[in-house]
Image (tube, rainbow, N blue to C red; front, side, top):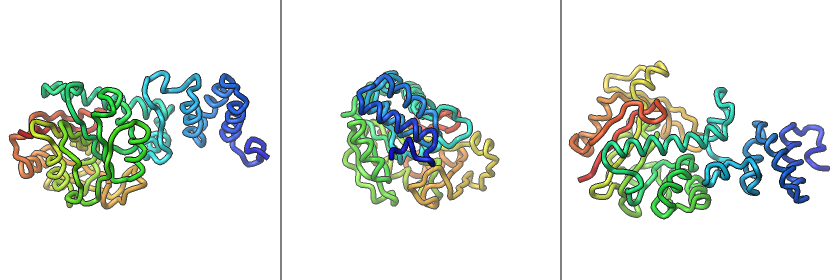
Length: 297
């Protein structure tokens, strides 16, 4: 008995099974239509998406965007979109969000006369399962992109799916072994999750990964984000809560953090020197996170 005839199968599961059967019979057009309907059902959304992408069917995002649109089932960021009440089309929202990040990074780098396309080796740190990596690899070519994350499956997925190089990070900042130095180290939404005990340590360690003349770009939850979430910062300009969208990392290590600009500038001054900051842009990423650009002499 197939899943489609099972009494307890959901509408999405029945559509998914029908799509698989049509593919086995070689009816690609019929499978595309059925799987597109299955993709509208939240319980099988990602499975239907994978079948459409893997079989290059009509309606695939890869055909529209010209890049690999494979999404890992363990991707917490995709899970956030899929579970959020405001996301009517999680696949489109997730993939478009990575594209938006690319455009915002390019604008930020133009502001310091370091165009992304003229940048050599780029390290995307705390890269997750490739929401942004796929777009960066298309822009630069996979050979110029390196990823790193503390979740082993995230690194292996990006290496396999996007052809980039990658290495495993660590829970303890000082334990990270840098394979090289990079012309750009891009750290999106890591410092918006770190506890006070590792915040400055990560900043110092990540600066060490930057090649001479290169840039460290990182983002934070600033005052706008704190006010939006009705968070009160302490006297130092810091707030941390031990919870986040991640299901793979302990909340005490990776929670939700808000910082004032004064707090961030003080940490830059004490770890690298205030003169290393070359640009700051409030609410730059997603109109929600502040951006800071540091250059190593």
